[in-house]
Amino acid sequence: MIKLAERINRLQPSATLAMSQKSGELKAQGIDIINMSVGEPDFNTPNHIKEAAKQATDENYTRYSPVPGYPDLRKAIVEKLKKENGLEYTTDQIIVSNGAKQSVCNTVMALVGEGDEVIIPAPYWVSYPQMVLLADGKPVFVEAKIEQDFKLTPEQLESAITPKTKMLILCSPSNPTGSVYSREEMEGLAKVLRKYENIYIICDEIYEHINYTGQHASLASCDGMKERCIIINGVSKAYAMTGWRIGYIAAPLEIAKACNKLQGQYTSGPCSVSQKAAVAAYVSSQDCVEEMRVAFERRKNLIVQLAKEVPGFEVNDPQGAFYLFPKCSAYFGKKDGDRVINNSTDFAMYLLEVGHVATVGGDAFGSPECFRMSYATSDENIKEALKRIKDACARLK
Image 1 (cartoon, rainbow, N blue to C red):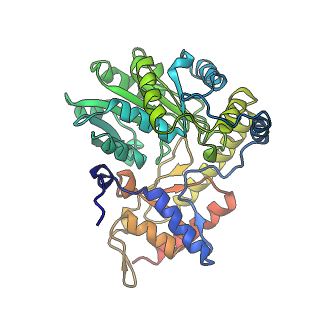
Image 2: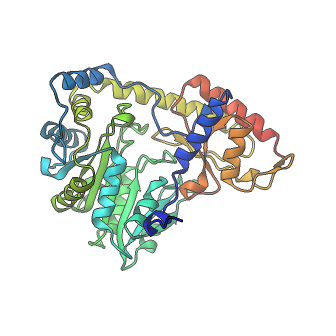
């Protein structure tokens, strides 16, 4: 028997990817599955971005890039942060990675050590606690319920801080809930954090542009916070470029250098052609971003309306990203024949196998009373999926 490293044994497989795989297997059997499990825009990458990639290959940008990314891409990111967020960085403070996922992991690995506590508001993106465990840290979960729009309060934050707290991970707009922190809410958290100078904050802003409030608020823009914040962002969601694998951090110089050192040892620089495509995404017209945002907002309004019509669901109105996270615990303990729904994972599997709609149980996100649906799909799919879900739920007694 092979003895694996303990760090691997500590990790859980990604529930979102597992559900996507399961739905793919059913599709391969000829079953009509509507997949609402994947956090991925259904739009194609805009043509001008694809053309930039073609040009990059013609110009032979096919060799190793600098570990932190090409200078023109880092410069474009600096200009984006200044123009859109009012934040001043130098190119040395930008590290481009193979997706925002690696950017988060780089930061955790560079800052978190054995026994360090990392505060993670729940519901959370499935990979945050796993990355902390990989770094020998200790995830500290703080439950933010649907009644508070799944958002951490200053009082909850203060209560969770101990002498071992090294980091807070904050995602806004949020995966899995779609919740968006307002400027006032960010200021409330900043007021607490100013008292604890040794706590760093990962600001995961990958859904920044899929925002229905009209304004994105970054904790890094609050007084005294920029020096302790690591902004995570990228092109995956806003520009429908998930497969291109380009994310970045904007961080204090010492942290950026540490991430550069780490990345240099285990992946080197990200894909050369993808970087040139990302430059085009940032420096060209942003009309495509707004077009997709408008479509997502229309779909959000549709899915909220339809989900509220399902008996037993408790539904809030998310203000960003492309997820709905309804409370489904009213169905726990109910049966369809011999099948019993004990938890949200059971519920999601029931919806897949009986309703033929792929979702993800909230257990994986630290919120076992809820489940996640991605509405990054067509209006027709949303209508049909919610009809199937409603019909499947009606069978549970």
